[in-house]
Amino acid sequence: EKSLANIRNQIEQIQSGIAMKNDEMGTELIDQLTLEERDLLSRLNPEITRLKEKFLSCKNSRIEIETRKEELENNLSTNLMRRQKELEAIISSADSKTLPVEVEAKEQELKESKRTLDEATTVLKANVDAINAHTRQMEQLKKQRDDLKALEANLEQTVQDGAKDLEQLMSSRSTYLVKQDECMKKIRDLGSLPADAFETYKRKNKKQLQKLLYDCNEQLKQFSHVNQKALDQYVNFTEQREQLQRRRAELDAGDEKIRELISVLDQRKDESIERTFKGVARHFREVFSELVQGGHGYLVMMKKKDGDAGDDDMDEDAPR
Image (cartoon, rainbow, N blue to C red; front, side):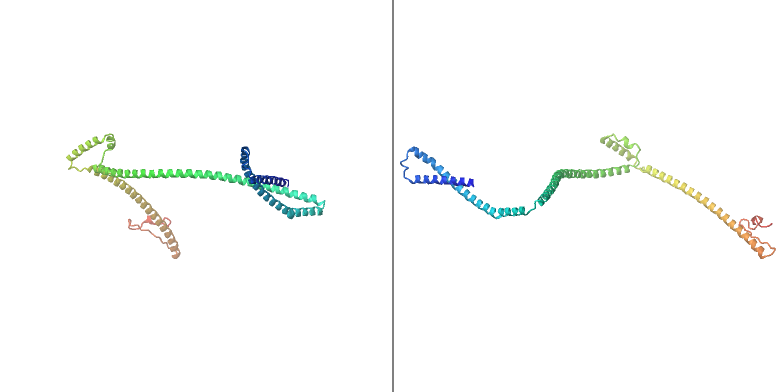
């Protein structure tokens, strides 16, 4: 209210000053003024303009302040005064003994609220730290991903270069294999070579080898009527004869084993037949003596080489 009164006083002073200036400006005394007075008047005109602007600003501020004052008065009369009356009624109706209990309960609630707030603050801080850690981890992962992408690009380029080199090497390998086959065919056409043929001509250059080849071809022309593959045929036939001899030795050894097996089986067969015959002969004597009282009967085995039976073929258990 004091500020409002001061503002009103300033406004009134400004208005009175403006009225005085207007009165002075309404008079026709400008032509009668001296140079100093005219100079002063020219300096005062901007001041008058500034004061007018200040007056308008103060007027607007006054309107806003009055509006705010009315709002505060309405709030005071409608809310605060009513709340004051309610609190006074509560205080007047409250018992002096229950107030400490309620105060203690409120303080306890306040402590619990503070503790809950501290816990929530701690959890929030932990979450913020975790978020920051995850953010840093994501940045590291992004960096690693970029590094891996760059490495992948380099590897792809390396693989492409390697594929090109491999293709060239495979082409060269195919060419060299064809040349190798041609050379091997020529070597086979030459027939059997000495064991030290490759070592002997390994250190010679191409011209020397071509000269030696020409000389050899000239010498071979003199032996055109000779079978050039006779040595190869002799070696092949010798190897075949050795194989057949080894096969014959194996067959002879197998035949000997088979003969031994047949002999053993024949011996076992004869022993089994003889043992069976002796049992049958013994049983025949017993049955015959029971059938014919006082009679004796014998079974005799006749051998093909003997033609007739003798005492040697009789059972050893028979009576003489």
